[in-house]
Image (cartoon, rainbow, N blue to C red; front, side, top):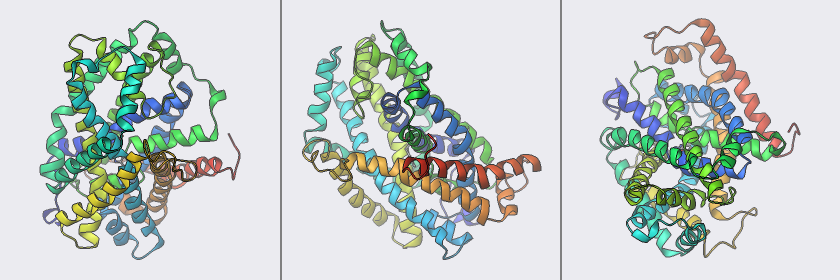
Length: 454
Ligand code: TRP
């Protein structure tokens, strides 16, 4: 079988760890809390959960189906099912989105790395919001240092990717992810018991639907895609390494539950503390970096907890960034026949360059605006709110309308080894063919003002 020539996952647990590892990352702990803060709280969370269940799960099944059917990188996979067709745009979107996401993701990865180092200094933990906010802006706007940290983060990711799937990706996350979960729960408990936390709990629990605009809905959709690593072929690529017998539903459900659980607990850890400390919830990307050290300061052995937390967050970010890099690297190696090592080097140079622009756009280049956005915001907005939804739309259309129904059934039932009721299959296919594409189209068209529903 082709499994012998291509690298693959060693075990069922390995697949789950890798897919969940890709999903759980800065998206949950850094991006989710600040998106909730920027978009008015509970109503945003409800929309987010709605999209995860209604859209993301079917898209995740679809990506797995494509990848495991074709056993190739995104471009090769689409080409083997629909040769030389317009569907190849899925491959193009994947590579562009991966580079675009990495161009800000590895900058934030670099911030995390810096905060691991910072946690060693005893003066780092203070309860003073202004001083923490100054610390963050002094660092992130400094120019050279954050650029170096971004390149270092990217280098570590690149080195893991060179090692290949089994040796690199699987090995690292097995023990550390559960540890991160425990730490975040600890933070949530501390945050919820701070004096003044109840305002934050209200913000998280009572939806104010009047705050929902077309941009909020788009942001919730983008966050759902981003957090579950969907819409740019990550899961197609990982799916291509999955054994034919593996139950795709189980992996999808478990990853989605782990990812969503992480996000919600991260929200509970950050938002109540934000209110308790009197920080404004719409700080944007700096929110977590300003809030968490203050929670650490309130805990016994705060320094040790801070070091462990930022270190494990760094690992979580790495297991996500390698999944992003793998999309580009698999494309270069399999389609352009470049060696794995050279593919990684080329990818490093491209992302190194754009990431540097995005890092500098927080400080020295902050006045250079394209479409009224800094480079950092532009990479983030374009990938999460435009490329991922369009990629996800194409993926469901591809599986629903282009692939043979028998092949889709064969993959979803793992070649008949799991019994899949025809009615349930029909319902899933209905969502993939009609509901998901219509829902994504409505959100996209509404956000650019072509239709006006909300
Ligand atoms: N989901 C990851 C996170 O939450 C980031 C990520 C990894 C991603 N692969 C992706 C986002 C693919 C979008 C698409 O941190």
